[in-house]
Length: 429
Image (cartoon, rainbow, N blue to C red; front, side):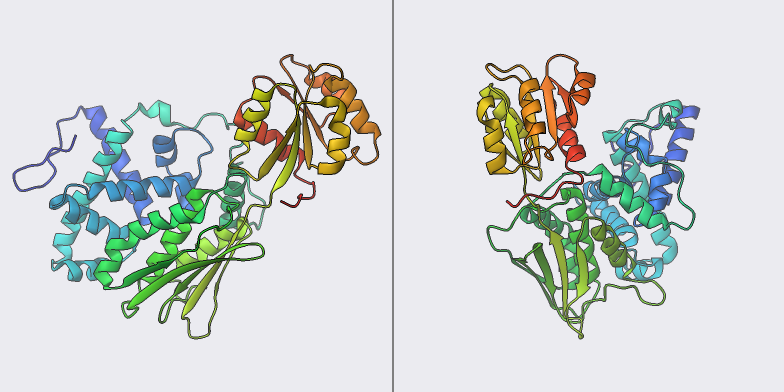
């Protein structure tokens, strides 16, 4: 709970000595993370990562997003809270220098430092409400969880490339649509646009394809693009439009004198745009300046390429469950309960993988697997066997590519499909 004194400043509640030490350590880590908000390798090492996200292997992009959300939450309530939000936004989101922020707010640099310290205290209180302090021992890194980024790095490898490649593996098969992420990003920058006296115009057609990237990445990408574009005081108006393309969706920002994608010699103020270009490349996208006069920035966002999966299970509920599991992924389920017709159907559908139940009448999963393996047109297709019994070793010996024990979770289902189709050709949608 925030406690305010009569002059509107935060009145810190009394704490034990240990509690004060933890608070001081948290504030120190928070200040460092704010200063390096766009420095993903630094955020990856931040003690705030396990503190605010809990699970080992959480990404620095998730930490950045959590801090941005907390900064937004600081401004709720108006008055001193809105002032604190404004300072945090200008200093750490826009990365505006102290002197410039002080001039904008009409205070001395010394006064700004005091207000900035109070704003960080407010931010810490917001975070503490959402994520109560845990004993220091609980925040110490434990054994690396499965899927966590390895500590070792190849000699000569780029730290950012390592971070982004690792981040890419954590979002296997996550998809999103453009409209919700764009709406959130426009909402995030609306205050900045008002301050710069820039009109935001949105032109978004219906029926755009699903994108092969997580909403978290897309939202931060678009927010960064808009923030950098709005750094030009003479912009006047900024139009955001989109159109379908062969490989996905092209998102375009139109306005006068937009900044280049590549950073200038001193690395500012477009460093964050170049960083996001590197991140987008990990998902198969691209950012580029379309015209020589810098009037248009275009972003190619990769669309989901549909991958057909044939589910063979005599239980209609299981068929519907697996179809629902795949609904927001790159996989599209075609299902049948007739195991005797499955070989012929597989030849027609040409799926990237089959998911076959073992316990079926007339022709069980073992016999169907043998038929699939011996037919020249279906032999190359990977088969995932399913059963309530733990028969993974038997499935492997029988020629199955993978095994799932029922009940099957969505995560296990999508992970198995990702494993067996990693080198398969993508089926047309």
